[in-house]
Image (cartoon, rainbow, N blue to C red; front, side):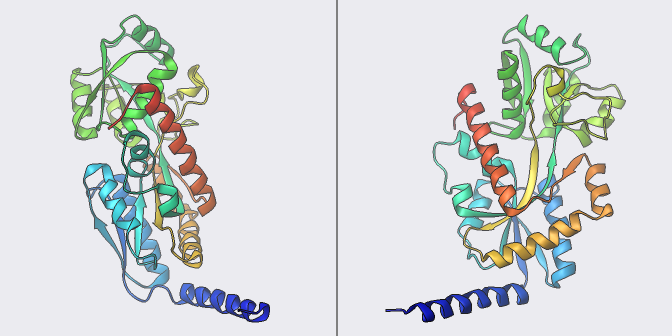
Length: 321
């Protein structure tokens, strides 16, 4: 039997050990797994995070790109890693909230098997059309689409991606029947959209802005909650008669679920402080991102809400893999 006084002593010793681990962490290089190829927003924001952690903690934070299968295998690697703080995940909605909504079988449960640390940034997009379409905004497009059910095509980076489900969310709320044309990346469908081979696509702000200025595309609405500084004259979809509509790509930092809370807190503190600086704010906003900084609890609630939303969209549009 462990007597009450001894039990209290053990709890205090355990708490002190965790605090000591956080104070000395890390004692060797840390691996940040990016479950996508180099060069995309998830990769770039993971590199930003690794740099901030390296500056403060004095150890290398090594980016390990493990792309393929919509990010699920790379994410699974983190789930199965030792929860000691030396393997972190650059999180993205694809493998964390969308794949669980559209796949019949998943090798992990996002909120059960991973510990959210911080949402780094959210990235909204333009709902863009080919300039030949005789529409100026969302209401015009809805009327145009309803008059041509099943005749308008939209592109996405593939089945079960943010671009796919965001457009299906729009179509469902608008009551418009659209045809999905999956591509192997945003660059490919953007080329076809410019050429007029498809009529509609979700294009991220940073890539959309120059194409709009050149007259190669026309944007009819922003998928964000509020207007972006990059395109201040572009109204949101929500303010054009579709209240509550929003869709974001996003990136954040997570870890295996059993990682000590003291280390979660330490990493969050460093990243949140770095993100709040004017330099980081300017960097992210200038790239069309909305800086995050959520607490681990807020990030977990956000992931839960996103999963529920995309599950409803996938069910309504009958999207299953």
